[in-house]
Length: 586
Image (cartoon, rainbow, N blue to C red; front, top):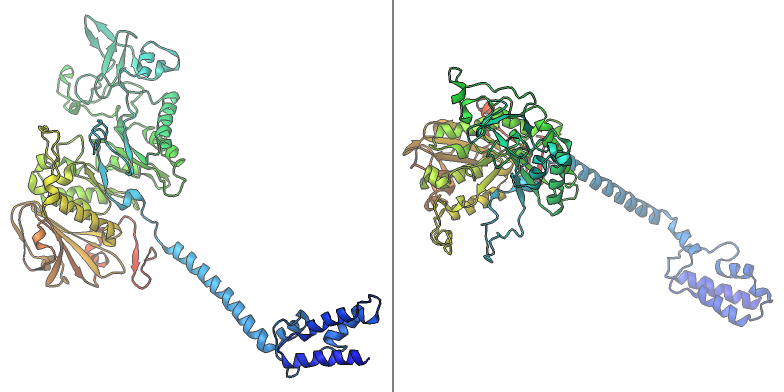
């Protein structure tokens, strides 16, 4: 009993001191002294009494200590001054997590869709065989580029294996092309109807092997495929899949309006009814109601889109689809965007600016507004000033217009598209020195076309007003085009003043009443003016000269009633300077 009493006193003192866990040490000493397993002091009941005592420890004036047993810890943790802070911290943590989740969901919900790669930067159209052939192997270097292939599914070569099998009526290839009976006597062919080739004369050509005529929208060496044949559609699908599996980033489908022809083969109407039918040989002399944009043609493009969408599921690998339909009206061209819930092309290529041979402010203005006014809501525009089917910009318009046309397409809403060589003012000339690098001089001149092109490209990539902002046109006449780019949430405005005519003096105060008297030149076709301030009462511009001006105002034009019908936006967004984010609930 004396020994037990000594043990209890030792434990009680250690608990009051709150310094060491003598209770644990005492248990070990007890085990060492009571080596007899049968002794009464070795029983479980005795151990419990030793640690806590019969009635539990007296916690008055006792502080927690390191290494306390869980029974003691539980007695302390239940006290209010320990429990309440712990519960407060727990619920604060829960509330913080819920707030963060809610804020994240809200930001995602109100944020506009991010621009995809085909929207964010300019496209550069090249001829692969001659583009950057650094190793002189006759093939261009395409490494590191987003690659869009120009694909003409309408026809093949007459040397193609499919055509050779079709003309001999071999298996499924028999109807891969459009064949029809015709009369061929003494070297003269009487075609099934009056349909004409794009290049003139009949679009039917007699084949002596099959003893029938085949149809060709272009040259006789390019027979049209029969897209009403499901096997042909499947062949084209497999070609698309082949290149997508190789890693190409998209297709531009050319000449798509020619994919289908009317099955009834009726003659097309003459433009000039009094013209002798046998004298009608030029493509423009007929209305092509039966050989272009037939019912079902858009279904074919949608099937191309569906095939490409199967390869667009990987993040960051969206596959672009563009269409080219030269000669179509703007209204028909807009149909290639698709329907509200059925997408076709991301955009049909806009080549109307590349058709301008004598630019003027009014003609440029008409091209811009006809596209923006007819484009379906929420769709994305694009602008081309050159291409393989047109003379080069410098040869077509003159050197004075190179810089201003680039300034135009880089400051309009949408994607600018450059045909290779236009950025350095390349002309339509025969190469006399194959080792000559055309852009060598451009890279060394501070005021070169290439230098301005690079500055415009950088501005387009980094300026929210250009990638997301409203477009509002102010004026156009025979000489100049004036328009702004502005964005809700910011009081900065970019004002473009482009002169396509002779020397002009413009009073911007008459166009915008609240414009400051002096504004800063952000960029100019004449690099000497960059960064200067200019008086808005009288701005003098020479032929082919353009300015990008910058000023601040709280009164944005697209909010004003007078300009409401003259402002357009593709993907509406607002800017929050406090959070530095874009949101769409403007």
